Image 1 (cartoon, one colour):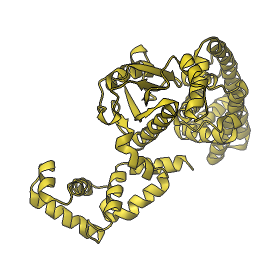
Image 2 (cartoon, helix red, strand yellow):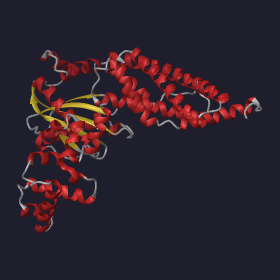
Image 3 (tube, helix red, strand yellow):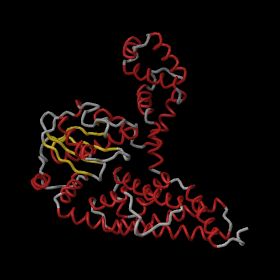
Image 4 (tube, helix red, strand yellow):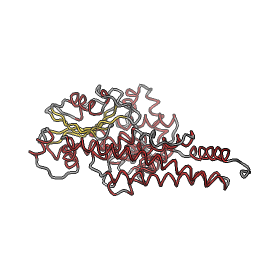
Length: 425
């Protein structure tokens, strides 16, 4: 059918097929998968276990994939002089600088990503069963476009990396970041040197917290995590605060002061507004306290992300410590919830009302009267719902009560637990 076509007509067919193949690629899913493979393959990335590094890598991968896909689907040829690296790709290159990772790791990530995209494109092309005369041209032309993109972006990112590294090493930020990484890793540090370098009272009472903004949020001076962290420290009663930016959307912070009390922290502090979320640890003394409180803040953040807390919310570790412990293995935690609740865990409005009532009922020590007052419902309704829950469970609510309370608490984050288990492989 294609043999009688002139070259121009054939090229139109090839461009149309390239667009069709590229349109079958799920950039968001592939961005997640690509990031996971890069983190498992590149040696310099293996120690970076915190979620912020992975999130930055996912955003960079996805942004590059979207740019490539849009060009291939739109049929617009790549031009070395006009192809621009996405902002998320530049931000991630800067983060590698701040974490002391070599330029070679950045370039290897792009080489591996190039290979992964080619493999994905070939698989999607095979699904279409293209005409033989067209198939090889589709792969060749798409491969050429991909090479132009990767070459142009890598050239820009090398310059970006080197410029950022030069500025970073000239400032005190690099030394501070390196010292903070040592502290949160639990490595021994000289207290006097640490206090001088960080300009922070490392021997005082330490309250660590993490502020992060959403991936889609526009970052300006008023919504920068460092700005929000400073405002939040004041609201928490801190008198001296150390703030360390981790990429563009996350800030680690420690504040000191005699009035600090993590348990008294407001759930929705005004400093966050609707701009960001925050997680904080408990108050602990000294350098070891900086490490412990930060570790608790990270655990609280994991709970917040698993349970999908809204922007503007502060998650305090003291209030989620038990949840953090029992959800440390998300896959097993999800299985526990399903096994423990049975039909009571069904995703329906009726079961949701029943679970909410039983949580309060257990909290009120099985008192229908107190439960009714708290929920603003009739006492007979509480009694009916308690009996209905026992029927669904096949046992008394007082039997395996601790397990039931934990399962009810975890159920709110069941989707998040399953997602975390899938992401962990």
